[in-house]
Structure formats: structure tokens, C-alpha cells
Image (tube, rainbow, N blue to C red; front, top):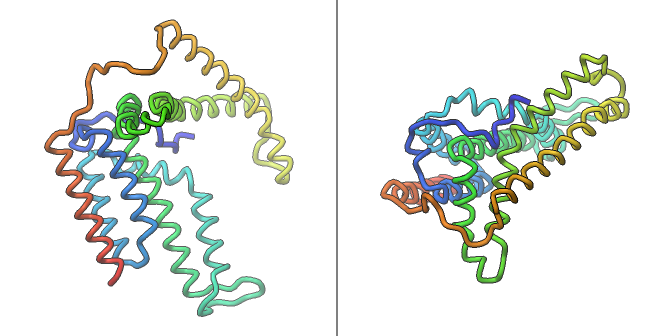
Length: 263
């Protein structure tokens, strides 16, 4: 559970931390789109250089970013192995029902890289942006939807609260698991059905705890006369020089990676 980094904030005095949250939201979207457009090793090489530069500037420890990757290790391995054995092409290894092809190895490797970079990119955004700033950025970025009566403020608040409580729920899950193990519960023995059944003592207390936290949060918001809608900001978002430089770097990065993609 300690491997979950999405939703956590890492306080640091860096340029990335000081960027407008809208810039970081837009940059994360650009990174994700580019990840699924890259089709060769040169594109991934350039992407790695840009991402390494962002990590360096953000001052977030690389070990902390790798914790998020360890959290999806099973999904990563499963996706890579599935593509390696099920992709047709030039056969490299063939035994019984297992066939490894050159195209499968390339596709499996690309899938693994995409998943790793996807987690790292989203983790950088959440580790360098507080939940409040993230909510303000989402509300400001999608403010134009208010014209069609879309509840932008409410949706942004829901998303920021969800991100904020991910680490809390993970800690709660860890506590419940340790408490059940202390009572003699077995989670690693038996077949798949038995393992699934053994999760019930964890899921039920976690569900009850989540509902209780949600009710307490709703009561606290009502006690403070929170009604959403049009609200003033103590620190209204304003673009600075560094934000325009960041947008310019996104344009350069996109052009460079798209160019490398067609080599």
C-alpha cells in the first residue's frame, strides 16, 4: 500500500511546484497523448530525455516515483507477457503452446515502457500539486463548460477529494489487513476463490470506514456553510513568465517527438 504515490503531495521549492496547476494538467495530458503516439525507439529516447529533465527540475526523489511503478508491477508484467506471446510475426522461440515473435517482444516492451511512464507522469503532477491547487486548476481550465450549465466546480471538488483520500484509504486498508492477520486471517493460501473470499473481512470494514469518512466530511463542509457555486479565491490563478516558458517547452517537445516518430 505504501507504493501508491498518486494523490500524495511532496513539498519542495522547485520550478515545477511553482507552475500554475493548469500548466501541469495540460502538460500531463500532452505527455499521455505523446506516449500513445510514439512508435519507435527514437521517440521513446527523446521522451525519456524530456521526462528526466522534468524529474530533475521537480526535485522529487526518483525512488518515490518508482514506488508507484511497483504498485502496478503485476499489471505491467501481465500486459507485457500477453503481448509477447499473442502477437503474430517472425517466430524467435516456439515450444508447446508458447510462441515468441520479434514483433511480440517489441510490442510487449513498448507496452511496459508506456505503463511505467504513464504512472511516472501522473505521479509527478500529483506529487508537485496540492489537492486545492489541482481543484482550482481543473475548475479554471474547464470554466468554459459553465456556459452549458455543467457543474465544473462540483466535479473539480469531487476529483480533488478523491485524489486527496487515495493515500488515506490505502493506509486504512493496510491497518485493516494487519489487524485481520493478527486475528489469524490467511490471505495468501488456497485457490483463487478462497483468496477472493478471504478479502471480505478487509472490504467490508474498508467500505464502512469510507462511508463514515464521507459523512464526516459532508458534515464538516455543511458546518462551514459550503454550498459550492461561485466562490472567491484567496490566491486567484494567474499565469507568470515561467508558465509561458513551460507551454513553449511543450510545443518543442511535441514537435521533436513527432519528428523522431517518423524517422
